[in-house]
Length: 494
Image 1 (cartoon, one colour):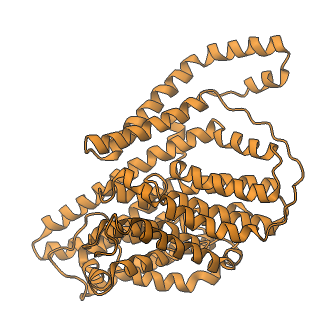
Image 2 (image 1 turned 180 degrees about the horizontal axis):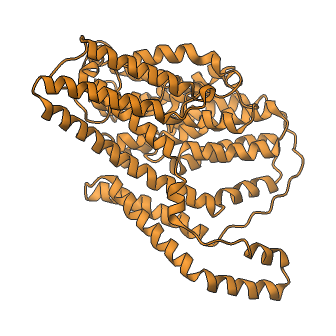
Image 3 (image 1 turned 45 degrees about the vertical axis):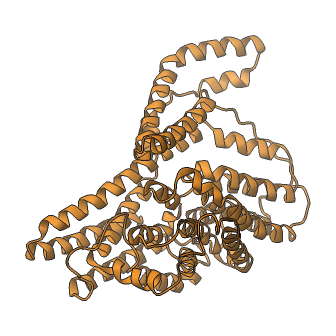
């Protein structure tokens, strides 16, 4: 999910100037789903210029979050309010207030669907984290005593496999925690592993509707069907494997010191995993068979979790009594002590722990760029990108831009433009927007989060040194898509 973009400590200032240029370029591109340009063209007016300036200022404050210690949601929330207030003022003056009100409501509806979907997914991930699912996986990997090279390939492969379900951010943080614990102090190895993990997590998220916010948007918009995302599996795998193979050649194949960590799953952990898979199946079935928005299935799945949470709370005393008797007979006093720290499962505490700053930031971005699109900037840039350029090159360029700017507004822009391009080109922009963020450490939520967790072992400059190799993977994934899916989805017949 690339909506967490911000600068990590240390060398992050080195990437600011391209971010500003990309932000300026994206001003005309950004707009939320289905928001169309209004009846009044405000691009040549002072109101339009002020709105653009506000968006630039808000975006600059978002990227300076680490330095000024202000959460990224604040500037975009204020900017969104002012931009739509300016639109409302102009349209009221022109006697067209109904049009601006309708546009705002449509934009808000699209955001609400995505927000509720993300909220349920975050709640399940938080529930699995609270039940120690991820801790148990990390503990198993540590106990096995893998060599550095085995650890490199294992964490990367698991990141690629888990991210389509758990999202790229959660997966990258989990794998990074393993690497930093096992190879503590070896900054060179941690840096290489973290780069590999970020690339793998972003690549894995690109071929699944649940892997990233951008793929979720494409699926909910009905542009790409659920099963069609999986044709991007091979291109995504190519994107991950090429840099991984090259980087693995620079790893000393030695074993880290043995570390043992005893982690036990809390009661209901496996059943919550099963409920999450059932929730995903419900969302997919509702969208595919009944043609209803996927958010319906996800909210139904939240109900599954609430019922199961009720069961866990009501049956907790009996469960504790049975376990206490069993551990007493065995003389397992360590587990008897652990029983004393057991607390009831609370669904709403998991909801409260969702990343609300991210969700509010998402709202601000959607409403800001929705206002800019309604003013007419979208139509202007759509003409430049998809009428004067070839769709293939336009989609490749947008993928590169997503390395320095959030891929959320990039995907919003393309979905809103609804350019006349083949299905294969829609799959191409899904791929490039998903994996393009791997080119820089600040280009994706996974990269930014891992920079913060690695405590200086994984840095902007450390990632930048391998950017040419990652670029090879980016180019190869595009070639793989054109070769494998070009004829099927008419990529060459735009």
